[in-house]
Image 1 (cartoon, helix red, strand yellow):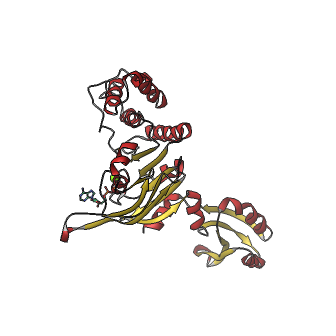
Image 2: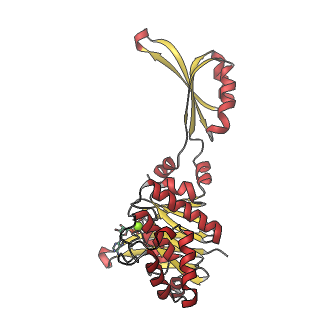
Length: 319
Ligand SMILES: Nc1ncnc2c1ncn2[C@@H]1O[C@H](COP(=O)(O)OP(=O)(O)O)[C@@H](O)[C@H]1O
Ligand SMILES: [Mg+2]
């Protein structure tokens, strides 16, 4: 059974005339142990969708289940069985308690029996490499360490579904990388399902098994990064320049290739070079074959490639 299986999520804010719909019929299905990325620009509706799925916000409509609980009728059960880390790690972190005291405080909030408190705290401190900061005041640790503390808190109870809303926002590259490594490590170790949001496409590309791109509350793309690449394929290019004989045109029988003559004005419009633009699904799998074939027809002076980045896909789907 899918950990999240909700359909037709609609949500608007405001009343009557001023009502604006920010989620327009979104479907989400996430399997156990997946790291699922929700991508979109600021204001796309990511946080709203997370709140609905975590049982924190009542949608205008929705059907389906989260952890087997009805998303509308059993929101209280959902809230009790998922963890959520808000974008600002400072929420839930008391600056004048030490790292360890913060976690101990939360064990009581979560109702962890006193016998198990120490173990629970030690385990999450180990898992997020916080042992060496255990006696540091929360206000003294770096933003990245504080974010790890916030995630550690969320993991005190071993919920199988954890929502991370912009887990790396405001962190420097190194701290963000560390958080990503921990997310993957925690998934591998405990088979936790992570549903995370980010506006960084590279972040999703690095750790998410699947991504969903939303824009203005609408789903624009869904799948693994590989799936998305394939879907938008035929858009990578290999550009080969050189002096070739006429038969180079026969390459059109084998590839989708545009042939351009390049003239240089200072040489009185004498043709200098020919440019062959191959449209391919995948640069890496085609490049050596193409170079071999082109070589038959003359001398290659330059080879350029245009690969499709996840950012290109992002721009395409939301434009
Ligand atoms: N409590 C609220 N009241 C009114 N509008 C809101 C509220 N929360 C969010 N919005 C609006 O809903 C849209 C989606 O917001 P949000 O879900 O926070 O997007 P994201 O997390 O992708 O940045 C935005 O236009 C935002 O201004
Ligand atoms: Mg948000």
